[in-house]
Image 1 (spheres, each protein chain N blue to C red):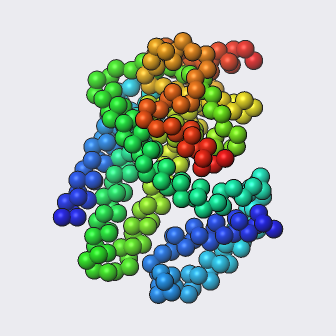
Image 2: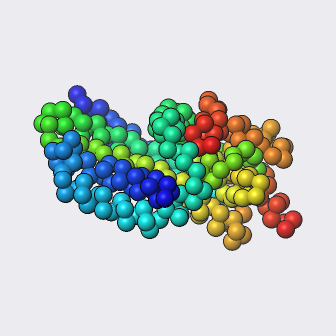
Image 3: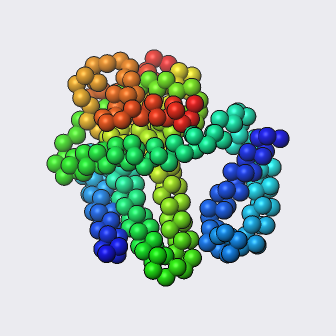
Length: 175
Length: 119
């Protein structure tokens, strides 16, 4: 029951975002609210087993929901800008030293792994290639492998980023 | 004023997208090409979307027409969807490439290769 409610509310909020500005009841028209309500119930019934598989409601915590956009706008965007300028210089000069390293993440949940893998792909010259589900380790392709990372067998996820403690942020948001 | 800011954002976005395309042509193997494709196009498109949002915000303040609010919100949703799908898709391509034997070349180290040999 609680899993169904959480999924339905999330679907309803997503529908409200998509139809904002359609009418006069705050921002939405009557029709959109009614259809959104019906669709949210259908989506909730159809998909609560998949979307809310673990039954844990930690993502309903408002602090986590506020931290997620803050994380996306400040630390992730600054790391992305640095990575992009770095890759842009490499596109022009053509200097690359690629390689695949093994990264220990320390995440405990699937959502944390998803956020970290996507953050790694979007940020500093790195690309997640494969995941080891049992040990929760990532195999990451680096466009420029520094010497100290090349000689290590397992790299800590923190060493991939330069300015912020991205794994710490993700742990605060998703676990 | 706000239109100028929007134009600058769109210019930066097009510059990064162009560099991404150049990177796809210049880099040596599939993984480095994915680097150029994923990062540069996501970053460039974020700036393109930022330009659209700035423009829509300026028009919303000027005309108070709710269609510009819809435009801004939809563009923001495009950015979120793009950031997730682009990262996930490139991860899928890289994994498939490595599993089908397309090894990184040139490379200085390949820990995944070492693991696959053992099992």
